Amino acid sequence: MFVLAGSLGDTLRGLTTLPSTLMAEHVLAIKDLTVSYRRVPAVHHVDLTLRCGRCVGLLGPNGAGKTSFLKALAGLVPMETGTVEFGGHNHKRGPGSYTAYLPQRSAIDWDFPTTVRGLVEMGRYSALGWWRPFRQIDREKVDKGLEAMELTDLAERQISALSGGQQQRAFLARSLAQDAHVFLLDEPFTGLDRPSQDLFGQILKRLAAQGNLLIVSHHDLRMVPALFDEVILLNGELVAYGPTEQVFNEETIARTFGTHTFSGART
Amino acid sequence: MANGWLHLFYAQDMLRPLFAAVLIGFTNGVLSVFIVLRRLSLMADAISHSLLPGLAIAILLFGLAPATLVAGAFLAALLVALGTQIIANSTRIKEDTALGLLFACAFSLGQALLKLAPAHVGISEYLFGNILGLSDGDLYLTYVITLLVLPLLVLFQRPLLLMLFEPSIASTQGVPVRTLRYFLMVLLVLAMISSLRAVGIILALGTLIGPAATVYLFVDSFTVMFWVSGLLGAFASLLGLLVSDWTDLPAGACIVLVLGVLFLVSFLLSPRYGLFRRLRKGHLHAQSLARWEGEKSEK
Image 1 (spheres, each protein chain N blue to C red):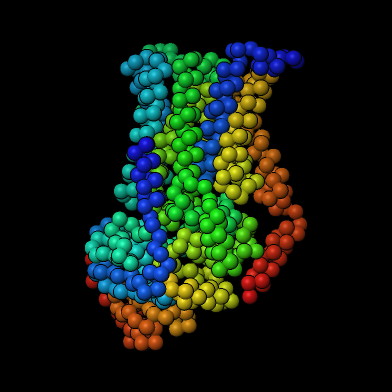
Image 2: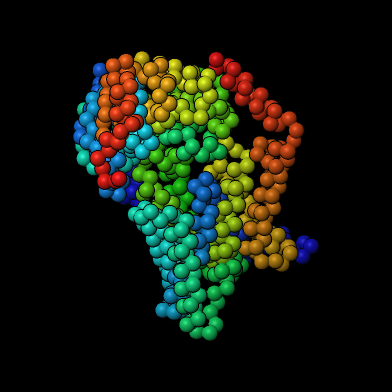
């Protein structure tokens, strides 16, 4: 147990954050990424170089490996082959705390005993380790995150007493408090009504404009041109990647959603 | 018994069980937060039954010595808990299936083994507890376990909170989620062993679920829930013991019944999450109005 205590402390303390000057020009370099579940590949040999300051849509049919791709970048499923690097940091031993993963909303226990502020404070734990009390700078980062996501007035609410869009923003505020630069969002628009979707889209754009990299899995193709600077079209393999106006067209959509380019072990 | 209960505070004999009950109540109360929030109630139920084969084997091999009984119980519970995790983590079988099967087998094995034991074994107090008959050994065991479990829970509060709330985000923040799950299981088994002699393995469940279930109906802060559940567990144990002394009913049962009554009252009357609050007219409307105003303010 005491061995565990030591290693956990090291893990939590060892996750350094990158200085903000680095973030704008940095790239997330994905080389030859393969993810498998029980030996069946879900994502095949993907090579991608993503630049910070973009809001990137991750598109593909059901079962195309979008969630697996995001989870691999977040270090939640092992990579069978390949490497992921960001600003000189290799993901081999897990992503740094500059990576924030937002799971699908249905995966969260919204009855958990925490307020919005409590949720955002959790973002500071990786910087603080498991001991140190909150400092002035931690409180400031929490306040800033709440403010940037326009949640200051709702900070003392229990998290189930928020609307869907507010809940998504609360998690973004947590990621901001964590000093994240790479945001991995799994279907964040699901279940939001139209006005909330528009507002959330604007907030994502704002985060990208501030130099962050956002990778957002999404399935509603009509909204794509309005939401994303760039798109990744994925169907097991990488079908296309590039600026939305160049890459997002009928031909690539048909190749991604129509034909089955998947070459893994299935029918 | 009219002036009876005050003697608890004077008589040396009564201070011991009181102290033990408060310690066990506090430790179990804090642990109950994790059981309630991680939805481990059924797991805890199963583990409490899994202690039986360990006890039976220990009786067969070494007789009724407390140390070996405890060791046997610990090993049996650990095997079932770890076996469940290993099966659930490495195959498509889900945790509840693995656990249900393993604990039924373990309990059956225990029952079968007990048949082989010499005719009369004092197993009933291990099942239902006997807080007034605690030996020095039992008491020391409770001290040691409390001194181990409580500081560890306090120390690991942050990573445990992250894991409880959302394991995958916790994992990206560097929390070793899987290790922490095993760790929580070990602490749970230790707490059960500590409760064994006092309230028995079945009634221990009440103190391992009741406090947090009650506090959960009042508070929206994990840290507050953590400490208040401990205090509530200690308070219920104290009150239960006093009620038991008053009424001459079994102590373990009284402690759990006190917790049950506290929960029932909270369930009905909690101002935030109680039943009556929900039934009151206007509540839903007020909530939706607040939500609507919140959404309006963001546009």
